[in-house]
Image 1 (cartoon, rainbow, N blue to C red):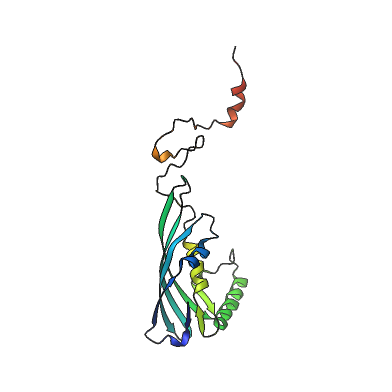
Image 2: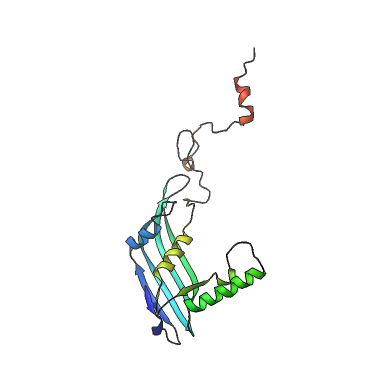
Length: 188
């Protein structure tokens, strides 16, 4: 979704669009948790301009499908994505970075992350492209360890039975490896 900054008047502007399932599937395809898009995503964005800066507030909801990481049961999830971002002209953003780098030289801080600029993104030209920003926010919102239910017991490590359906009777007790040598001792 692209928005021309000149279109944003004093009252702001609202935009709504749908992300097709194929596009959403391409975004989540690289996730290690195995998510797939089961439908599209509806996106609503509000743009407000203050001088050359643009404040963006985005809400989206995506329908996803995957497998439980514990028991491999199919799961469906509605992924809410909401974020606020200030778009700063690239020249102004670069000036801030230079000032911040000068401050860090006098007051060193561990790491290179500057919290003051965490919710800012630089833009160039008159058109802002929200697609890469939205893509990043969807990936950040994905649950890394999906489960079918909070108390999922998973699969038996011996026979593979789903333990949510009941116990299987296998002895899953892991012996302490420090005592493993004593198992070989025969008492006469």
